[in-house]
Image 1 (cartoon, rainbow, N blue to C red):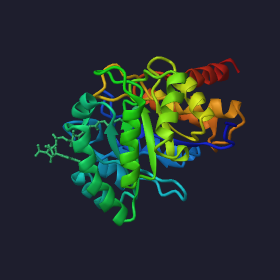
Image 2: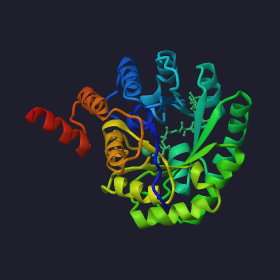
Image 3: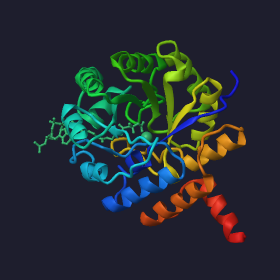
Length: 303
Ligand code: HMG
Ligand code: MG
């Protein structure tokens, strides 16, 4: 399949990127990050998660984050919601878009949201229905699509079933999460082919983690399969507190670098994005994890 001429990047840094950090970032820093990301040209920025603060302490300030979001034409700020309580809080905070999150692994589902896959889908049905009735867009995630830290291999057909269940309930897009980064390009292609038989490929997004350095290779494989939406996290921030061993998400600047190299438009200013990666990494007391940010910063230092 020819590569797309355009891709959409869903920036998940403020949520997926920060949920696993030891250091609790002040709300003001999270808001400054969101503002900077919007300034770079990102138009979908997952802002926070209305989850139990006992399960994800970093997201405990979800309502404060929502109250301080920049008002930018054409930029949306989806939030994660695990249940009706989360939906109520998201609605009260003025969210316009939510994402529900299921898993393709039973063990991960229990560890992440304290219920079985079947129970989670039953839980999401009224959440999705009520959100849509309130005029919200709803995205669906499936985690552990290319392997689970507890169960190992996950069958693509099992992923396809869950993706279809979420799509059929009303999710406009299904993000396939390689939560621990076990994926390789051929496995990624096989997964997309299997899921694409149940959910249209144009309704799928790729969400890759770079634990084994395969995220960009997997994105290239997914592009070849016709996927044109990718989740990414500035500076490669992230990981899941309930997925031991998972490293950061693919860095947004690496996806932009790949897209530019392939002549694909993604509407993001790379130079500003690298500044943002350097800044947020500094706030977290380190330098950016991504090779692209490191290379561009080193090149700038050389003049
Ligand atoms: P539970 O303990 O079974 O929930 O957790 P519960 O209904 O029994 O409630 C327990 C307590 O939590 C109660 O408070 C509730 O009020 C409260 P208490 O009476 O003990 O004081 N509670 C809430 N508080 C705020 N917001 C809520 C909420 N719900 C209950 N929405 C639950 C079940 C789903 C709530 C919990 O397991 C949870 O919040 N899990 C989320 C954990 C998380 O954030 N994980 C990271 C998500 S990332 C991911 O999944 C992967 C993804 O990034 C893709 C990828 O990388 O591959 C999407
Ligand atoms: Mg992730």
